[in-house]
Length: 225
Image 1 (tube, rainbow, N blue to C red):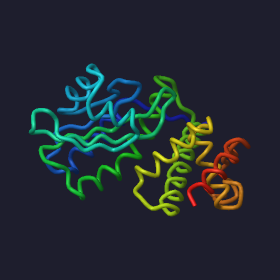
Image 2 (cartoon, rainbow, N blue to C red; image 1 turned 180 degrees about the vertical axis):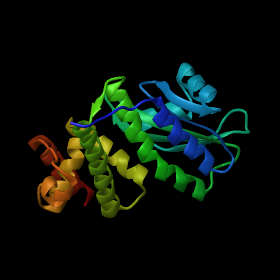
Image 3 (spheres, helix red, strand yellow; image 1 turned 120 degrees about the vertical axis):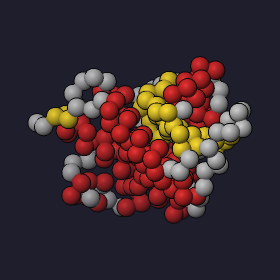
Image 4 (tube, rainbow, N blue to C red; image 1 turned 90 degrees about the vertical axis):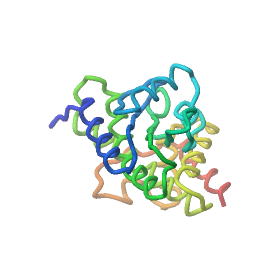
C-alpha cells in the first residue's frame, strides 16, 4: 500500500498561498484543540494570544461554529475566523488577518482554500507523526466530501449560506448524538434515495452510515421542509 507522509510544511504552503492571494493579508493560521496548530506572519502572535486569553474571534468561532469577521482591539487589523472540519477533540479554525475589512473577493478566496487546509489539519491532528496509509487518506477525503454534499442539500432546502448549513448539521448531530460525518452520509442517502456508494461508484468504497444516523438524517430533512 502506498504511503503519504504529512507534516507542517504542507500547512505552511497552503497558508502562504492564502496570504499571497488575499490583498493586504499579513498572516494566517490554523488552530485546533484550543491551540495554534500552524501560523504565519501576524497570526503567530494573534492566534496564540487569543487561545491564551480564552477569548477573541478565533476562540468564539470554535465555540459557536459561526464565521466571524471582526476588527481586533488595535483597530488596525481585521480577522476572519472560519470554523472548519472537526478533529477528534473539536473543530479546527482558520484565521486570516488583513489590514482592512475583508471584501467579498477576499472571502471567496478564503472559502476556496479553507477545505484544503481543513483536510490537511485533520490529517495531521489524527495521525501526528505517524505515516498515513493511502486508503486512510481516501476515507478522510470522502468524509469531507459527504459533509460538503450535506451542506449543499441543506442550503438547497432552506436557503442561507454554507456557514448556516454547517451549523444546522452540527446542531442536528449533537441533538441526535451521532457523528457529523455519519449524519451527512445519512442525509445524502435519504435525499438521494440510494446508498452513498451507489450514488458515486467512481469515488471508491464508502462506509455506509449506521442506522441511527440514517434515522436522524430522515427526521432532520423532514424538519427542514
